[in-house]
Image (cartoon, rainbow, N blue to C red):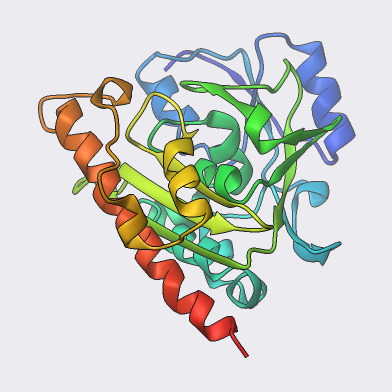
Length: 272
């Protein structure tokens, strides 16, 4: 690991000033992705600006029909929150599946979304729920935020402050976990926050994406049967020795069916 200077600001404004003053600085939240990268010399920031204790990035609240969660909230906090459980149980379930207890108690919502690891879980929820990423300077729609592998619409020096998740009519997350890391080999988040149903896929491709062909099939008939004959293109998939592209494509199809099946009982409960 290269030498660096650790900085611990007292406010978001001070953190932004430090990031602006040091062009090679990196914001530090849970550090679950950045610190391993530094140990492997894949990243060499001159300064680490710690955002984990900033009051502006804490807390969860209901606001205008959405659940707003501060970027510094840990995965464990989301998984154990009664507020999340009562309003977005699928998001609570997703948080409970992330990696292992050590990572869940250190990793943060904002860090995961800003890093945009192809195998991260939260990006699927952000995209499927049509959430809004609230940054230090603006609001970014989910469809505009994730731009590529480990890449987002964040500008240099801009940090994620909170995520605003619309309250879903129904939602479900299904994941196939990597045996060692707990990361998503593939994960599918299906959600209906407004009139439309959205399907987001993580883990299987270089970047989280919406499976729009599945959304079109499910628009008029949200049932497993509506998925009959629909196939995921293997050319869109990542591939490695353990998970070849055709296998991963089939896995996405299976997980999507399971997510859709999980939505049906929720719809039945809502009928008078």
